[in-house]
Image (cartoon, rainbow, N blue to C red; front, side, top):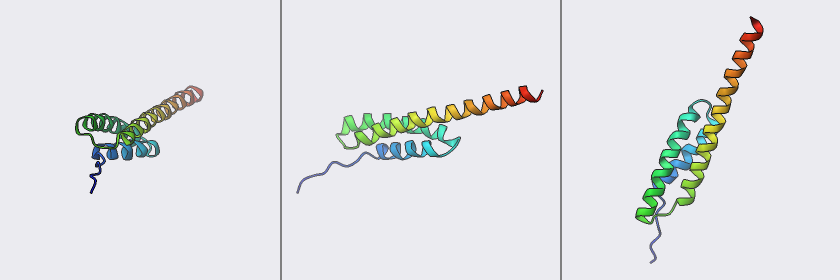
Length: 90
């Protein structure tokens, strides 16, 4: 019977939180940061323990970065809208 490498738990958490960071408004910024932390942790653990899941950690990292950038742009858009709206009304 051949042994299968187990998937690293941190990489699964990383991809899950990274995908959620894309779709949940405002909380997605925090989830993106958590996803980056878990993906870096997963890569270090995978290199030490020879587990599988490096691709999951990489995809989680990318989704987290995209989620953070997306939410920062949304927040910037809200701030710009409010400042322009307050300028027009005064």
